[in-house]
Image 1 (cartoon, rainbow, N blue to C red):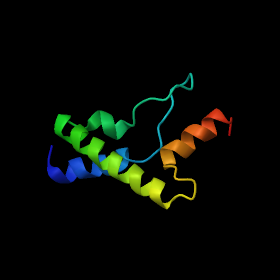
Image 2: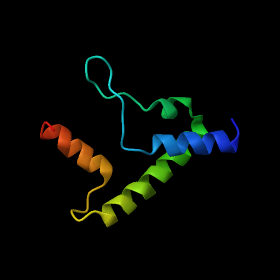
Image 3: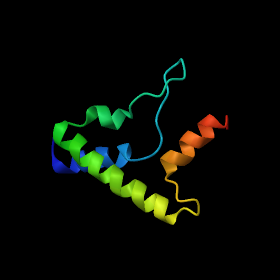
Image 4: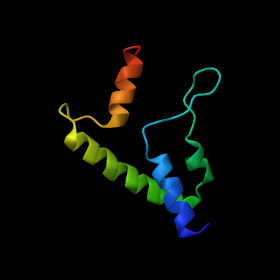
Length: 76
């Protein structure tokens, strides 16, 4: 895998979106599944940084992931 392909997959996988299977269970983002071990380590660091930035910009101090989880809990 070249660096350009890895960076594109990391960008795709850092979103809060997670697909669901037919039963409604959350499954890994397809880009995550396409990453190699090096890419998954880089994804982890990128995701941590992104979520901190999101929380810092949010009036409630929550990341997009936190908002998605709360919406799911609240039935939205």
